[in-house]
Length: 432
Image (cartoon, rainbow, N blue to C red):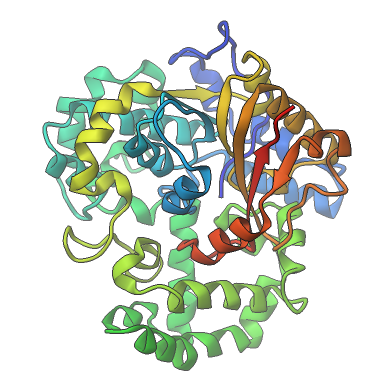
């Protein structure tokens, strides 16, 4: 669930410099995000909803990316020498891709909080003394000296804008970086949305964390059917989720809400129930750190269950060796690609950003993707509804230069442990 891409940041040649964002742009709440979201008149009901979303989305949204990088890398057949452009979001994907030693990873996002998080993650990989320190910082909850580790090892190497973001104080007088002394993953819009889900379930007498006692998929299925599923039949929850603003915490803008609801029986409660069922029942808990975040509100300890790739000890050396291959760009994706030479990108990761876009924006994006793509280049993305949204919206002359991998797309969608999307889609560039 990424941030989409409103207007461009300052361009320098074919790339964007590490300090390409002035502090007034970074903290200009909602304005730039809104340019990607606004599709209706300001004083209309739909327009007001879009503007509320843009305001909320201008801060931290995703402390953890909610797409499965393992599925991404398999679909992309990512390997050495590949040049990749991706959406940054929470940054877990970027670091995971480094395990395959691509030649270059350019990560683009307009959300200033995500940019600060990604730049901080890169410096943490470079400068925290060991893998166990990296895990304590990004993987463990209630480690009250993480902010001290930031001051000593990370802050001296951060660009001024990102450092200002993490050291800015709240109304309580706490620096923003101190969230890592507690539980970073319970912050941001997504963290607050999950917390609200737990509160609602407990209001109806159900503790979602109870599923963590399951010893098998059968136990997980039993807990879902007996405890979680009935909550979605409650009239209050069905009424609440019928409001588009109810899903803003998932990073779902009004336009994407309309797409998402088409994949169910006409009620958002049924859609959410089906997506939660997949998360709860289709993958063993020991293999799914997304379920740990949703139900346990934390990551497992090392050796307890699977972790994000960048926190697994076995990947530490490769990630640290390859970290200098990443560029973080506070930029509009279309304009960023426009600054690249033809045929110079091998892999594109769009997350679900296209669900936000108008037909004109989609065609502009795919014009640049097609121009910059090498022969055999691969594009992956996710959609709220099951089908690919490109046919009928993107020019036939553009789509005819790509092959849609239907079987692989359906297989990847089924294996995506994040479990919240309707469809995963893979396109491959044809030879001229």
